Image (cartoon, rainbow, N blue to C red; front, side):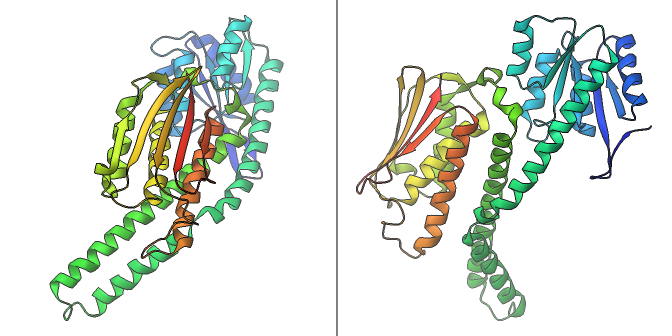
Length: 363
């Protein structure tokens, strides 16, 4: 199959056409293939979703009114996945009312073409979307280089521990007592988990930076997300964060049960990061409060503790620099989440006795 050639990336531009009417679908494909694009087809949103995951197109042209999965549902599913959410989408429909256009744009749709199809309009929209995406990709690539500083020194320290202990076991496996080997293996496992956590945070950081730099995501409304059961995810985050640090008994939980539209993964991440910061800045036995309240159009979530930022806290068995890296990494992620998802994050860094984190969720 012939395809539009990208000399800079040495790849052909792939376009997926999702349209339930065969005549229109084939007409669009003919126009695009004449311009040397690589074109794939799907007859409804469900087929389009499968095709998108398999081929990851550079651009999607989708009808709105379709069986099985309509255009709005299709876009919502595409935007859910980090692997596909940045693919530009052009809506194709007989509908031309402003409300329909706005509904699509609010879900992150790039452009809108009305039927019947005019080749010039189609190709103009396609080329503009691809050009905009190309500029965005360059900007993202530049941003990918900058966050190397986000990788903490603790990553190197954990890697050195794993390599060092592994060498000890390898070189002296016949002379090391079994109980010491067990301790070494546990330390290797714990540091491996730390590395896994840091790498996941780094990937989350890159994903958030990508969202911020993508102008398409500025149009995405929280209304496109499913309802989040706040209590369920708060309890889940407390279990995962506090249990891991052996601090579950220190956490006092008293939050309002509210359902609101938000990204489930990042809702839980917000709580985990705020809680981790307070745990980092307090000692075992110190009380940590997780509570909430409604204020105007916001759901306010608080995590409080009688602690100090790591720069002022006495830290045992760990360098202040490494603790500070971990603390600052969490703060940076929380700030980025608030920028992407129309929220607000605050913490009272100048208070010498108490540390309080607050996140404002739009209702």
